[in-house]
Amino acid sequence: MMHDPEAISHSVHSATDRQKALAQIYAQVLERQPYEFERKEIAHLEKDFLAGKIDVRHFLGELVVSELYLDSFYRDSSNLKFMELSFKHLLGRTAHDKEEISGYTDVLTKHGVNAFFHKIFDSEEYRKAFGCHTIPYARDVKFHDSPRNYLQSDLIQHEHIGQHGKAVPTLYWQELGMDCETGTCVMPDSKADQHHAYQSVAEKTKVKEPVSKALNEEIEELLQMLQNSDARQVLQSMNENQRSLLRNLAK
Image (cartoon, rainbow, N blue to C red; front, side):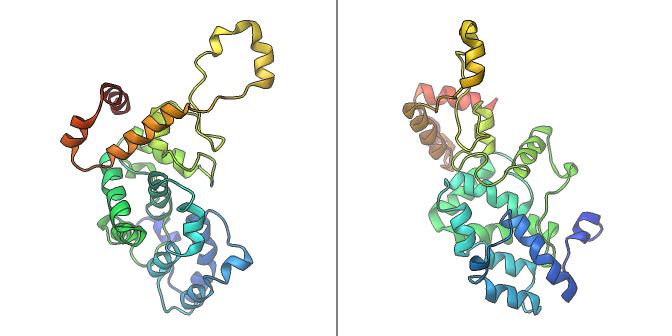
């Protein structure tokens, strides 16, 4: 890790480093700098960090279970989206695949946020990439095992709070062909080409229809089933529509 120039630039050791590191940490983990009233909640953490009593890893471990972080990314979000954002903030990437998503969301739903974060911080990947003294950062393309995984990570790294919605992870909304750029995920307008006579009016007043309630419920049900670690049981319980949707997701 320490031979990587990017890792070195994000490493924190001296007192001077620590003062500068706070802004870097907040930009990476909160995606902004905290407001003055928010800093009161984490003032004791900042004090211990600046005094050298705790390292970067310990500081992050306390920050992500604070009300500040959970209010921003957990309480108004789905478990799947929260997992994706936590990966972005702490591992510098998005989830590799649905198997990884299933493993982490299983811990989150059954054991809570503390166990979920312990799984991240105690992972060999985190230890090797960041250790105790390096601020997480978006890792370069050589880290990714496939072009698709790189594209997924690139999308999530350029996302801002609320930009891509609070429920559907990037991996799923992209595969479903949904448009989540505005913060509300909508299905593509398949009827657009059927109304050429109204094209000029549509360009000015175009409003995308939200996903139907029935489709929303079906997608939500399928995503919940995908979290089940028993693949055989999941497949047996699916109806034909769900199997078709799963086949499309797997392409």
